Figure 1 (cartoon, rainbow, N blue to C red):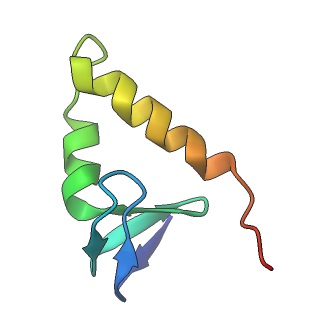
Figure 2 (figure 1 turned 90 degrees about the vertical axis):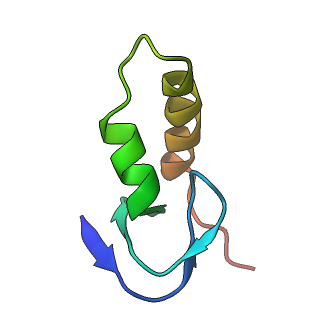
Length: 63
């Protein structure tokens, strides 16, 4: 897990943020990280986070 300090687009909310973490190659802002940590599996938002986190396994395509 690496802490990011430059402006990046969050892989969860798609907003540009300056603080967050990388989970593999997916940047997650601090706000989304906190929301995910406090979301219970029976909550509606849980599946949304699961679907978004699936993107972390996608290789980065450089052209």
